[in-house]
Length: 496
Image 1 (cartoon, rainbow, N blue to C red):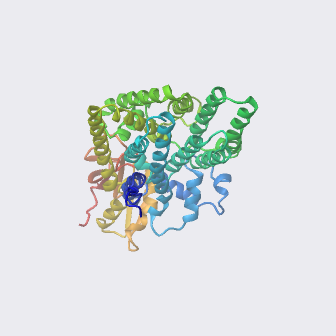
Image 2 (tube, helix red, strand yellow):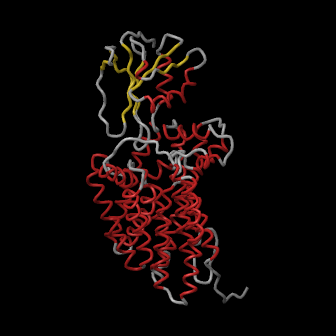
Image 3 (tube, rainbow, N blue to C red):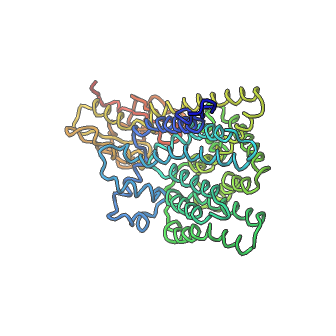
């Protein structure tokens, strides 16, 4: 070696690129682990409903030809079909967990590339910070955590929607075909996960429309490229709509005012206490619009894309869709993409000055803390404690036959029927619908309460004069499932 030659810098374990990979890997794995305990609590109504629907078919294609129901999210139903029978219920949720974990990684990739596209002269590692910070925001939002551990199609739909956006980011004039194929795959798999993926497809058309009129080159080339991006996904959507969606039966639910649903969306995204929903919503929209303006000033096509996917398409859906009932989960796609631009807004504040860094760090800490409290409730209470409730009812009933009634035959019976196996072979649960209960009543009465409902009285009397006293209360975490209030017929003398 020439002694005058300076040693070459090491590109070993602690190079900047590898530090970023390790840091991003730690964030993705960390939030995957945060999502994991949510798999192991009880299934709730909609998950059991999906399982019951899939159990009626004999071939996988019947998911689309026979199960015309809005609780059938086809790709999730296919996963359930392939898994049946399982040794443990949590296995039905693995698809959502994998998709939810992948969402954190995709968000980081999109955020880093987005920063490079918007600020090509301001890099020096800033794009890596953008990726990490956005991954934290997407990974830590309780709304996304919750549905990443539920056997439904919401988490896969968001993951495939982000895959479609990533493909659009990667495309260049000279290398767009393979990315257009990946975009089409993301759209098709997203639609099969949940129909809400149409939001991404409409926004994608907006992106391409902006590029069509603002980019240079022959019109024939630009138009061919635009058609190449969207023809396949939209042809599939038309076939999917005619063959499946328009035949779909809507399962129903509870009417919820729009403002209350939006308050819940903001609360369970930002980590605010439920009592401060009236604060969370304006904070959420203020941060959203500010970040959208920052992006739109630098890229018209990105501003149009995010404006369409987050704001415009949900409004169009509420105006023209047959699905009139509103729940926070119906804004899942909008929230996922909103968190991408909120992450961008936080990064821009971070690089302004040290005082703003303190504010951003404090905000992220409060965000993680607030959402962490909701996550702890999900870990502890799940989407309801139906298994434990029925097991304790059985333990306190001194008879071989356990008679049960409730305040909602469809909702509660499906849970009782699914979990009746917990009572063991020496006892049997008999569920009586409300209009078929004997004159002396049932031994146990179940009253359910959704998020925000007031608790029932300690003692109640049914229509036939039978009196019941509240014995137990089983709570649930927000967003899915419900509380169960267990009432004992006063004529029953329980054991234990």
